[in-house]
Length: 178
Length: 178
DNA sequence: ATTATCTATAGATCTATAGATAATGC
DNA sequence: ATTATCTATAGATCTATAGATAATGC
Image (cartoon, rainbow over all chains, first blue to last red; front, side, top):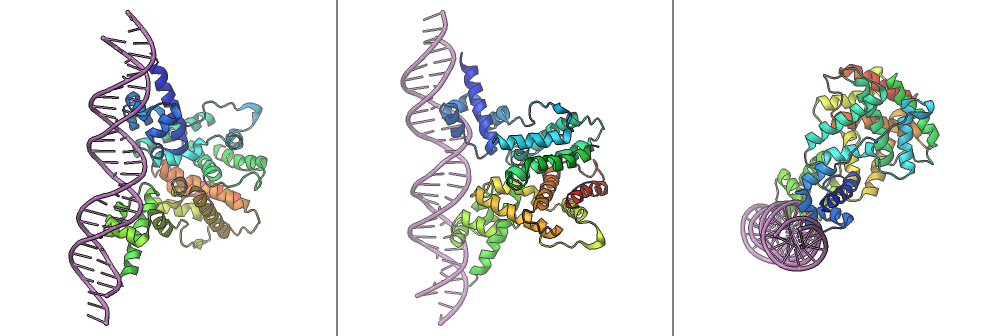
């Protein structure tokens, strides 16, 4: 019964593509090609493109987070973003806008991502206030750096030394937290 | 010779739709319907969808800017964004990501928007340095608020009083400038 | 006559389904 | 026999074009 395996392969392929290009720019054919199956197979296993997306929606916040080294959370957050840029990995913070605006169900996507990001940050910074305003402000600031660096291509290595960027923007974020 | 007029009507309709939904989510049929012509007419007048986009690409930064009232530029920038939200107007800062990622020519769109926004901010804050690092940092911070408020729906009126948001995030932006 | 505009339709995708074939387990 | 997978294709869009008709200017 390799059905489970097939399903997982397809979902992994889809997740990769969705997290790079959003929903509508990815076709069933693309997913099939990357997974090594026919488009019909993808449809049979997943039912529909919308269901495939539900199963393969990019899981956004970075899985784990170790505030090692005693640096502030603000600095660490920014350092992560720079590290992903350096490694040419995809940047979740830069994909949020696309994921919301190009989702099959925009309102649901907005609500889900909002909750995901805010609660993830709230957990990082120990924000237990009812409104979590601080966390929301931090989300804005970090979102901006992600989009600025990756979507607009701002502040690349030659324009501003990485360490200086980490310190300056990190301090900015930290100032919201304190 | 109402050709000029027809063209302008079509471009205006297209600009409105593109600035709300990006490139690919807008169809020639949508533009035609809003302009009051047939899809064929839109094609005949504009040549192709890509050329229509070139003529009707949303002109992003707010047209003018009066730093009246003696408030800091940082505060004024944020106040504008809140005012647009209040008035239910579309938010250019929140559309940047979609406009880049969904453009027919992504690299060109990135370069053009990057230059547009950075130089607009540089002008606002009198940044004449060669690298315009400050301006780029400000673009990031403001971008984040735009995307946070409008794309993720963060910090609505009931979650944080507008004036407090203006003061706090405005001060943050201003701290980059100083 | 020329210009403005439309209807009709070709050709390219895309999602989705029907039904055939190949592989596997008994 | 059943399960996994494919080929073929229907039906829905979408951009783009060809060619017909209506309006305008001489």
